[in-house]
Length: 323
Image (cartoon, rainbow, N blue to C red; front, side):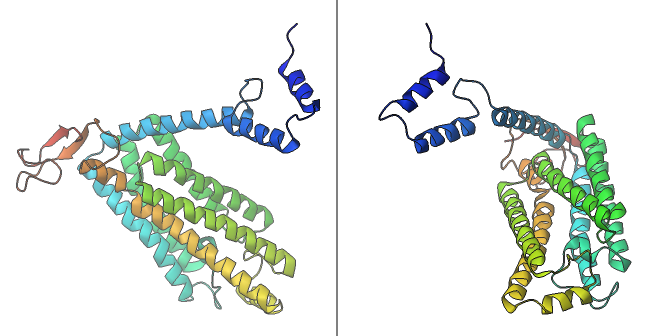
């Protein structure tokens, strides 16, 4: 009669000299990380990992198709979008610290706090919409139906987060804002693959996100411990008085946490924006990424370089394979 694996493990556990509790724990952890149970069945974690790998392959396929259809005009639109997104990160912040929306100001402060009202808010919205107008045209002309749906969903998430449920609108509004902000960062993770962003920019994005989450949690714990209001629930003046009443060590720790949040949040978006064309440029130069996929390029016979390479008719659009 065949003995079940569970009964075998129980018998070996009860035998003198059988595996210790630590050995069994290590074995179980190994089963979880391998995605398989001791009976050879796939775990929930294993199924989730398989689904994620399948999704990554789908995004990579969409990326190859998207980049293969890009034209010189599309790349110029992406460059315009990159400039507008960089301005979107810098200009509203400068306007906030020039006291165009409130005085006194809060430093350090999150992006959401600095753009929640006044001139910085409307400046941010105008630049963000202009950047999306450029990038959206590229998705419309070169993207598949699935890619266009993703772009529309990401755009709607941005509208939800910064236009409708901006920071400081109350408890429920702020909860909706945080939910939208989390979804928007996940969307950026998808865009990193979709635009085939170079590994250094991906690493910078993910490292900044890790620091942001750790600093956010650290600051939250300090605020709760010392009775300090979160930045969205009190004016800068009120929060400043609350921080002044806390012990010196808590003040320094909270400043470091807030500064880490501000720095990592800005670095996170800057890494993505600066790197969003790295995959496109690598393919145009034949210097990396997926190979063997064609793309539309604009010829420049004068110097033999650039879009078309030597021998392409001036102003012609031709299909060039990757090196």
